[in-house]
Image 1 (cartoon, helix red, strand yellow):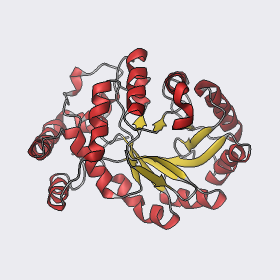
Image 2 (cartoon, helix red, strand yellow; image 1 turned 90 degrees about the vertical axis):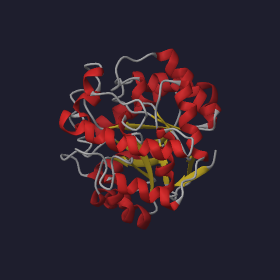
Image 3 (cartoon, rainbow, N blue to C red; image 1 turned 120 degrees about the horizontal axis):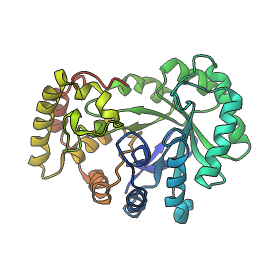
Length: 312
């Protein structure tokens, strides 16, 4: 697989990564054995960048990923995030950051975290103080690169002035275009973009179902794309996207990932799956090239993303 450089500090990753949220949080009951097999399959097929967070099972997701990657730790980059409480309230106080990062190092069973993100802004703590605390771990050799997630352009600039930010993580897909507002500041400062939920939380997976088919704990039951007033319109968009994919003899998910890779050369999507076959299918998208006419048609079908917005 080709590599992409994110930021100007030396972070190089596979052009498609792996997002591990679903192994421990958000998409119904987890199954560790299958998840570990899927993670290792991703690496076998060329994936070198793996993403998790404290909140994905409150440490359990980190432990699972650390266990899965232990045999090939030196061949991959691992990213994790801090900044939330179990009630999903922001908490980026310096003492909390230090506690969480030390826990993450133990959970992942690593000596250094490759990429450390603030999971989201904390209105009570200036971003300069947050990044100043993150920098302590860089200086101590416990973190290699810094990132921000789900933030705004002003905060990116302020953070970057304290310590270089290598990556912004933000949701980006054919159905979610919010990330495009950041392109100017990312290009100005030389920051990469890690695109999470590149398959629109499953809406672009080729197997979307209405919300009543999902487990009560499944986050898709709360996302506006699945709301009854929006669902059928979004299914109609997916149908036309699927026709484009079928004309190229590829899957909808492969089309969606190829679209992302074509947007900018500093974007790395991190699809996640607990199914090794689905993982292989996603990774094959790295070999797919879309024509300018195909890209234009996709943009025409969903100029503002999915109907109803991502809502998160």
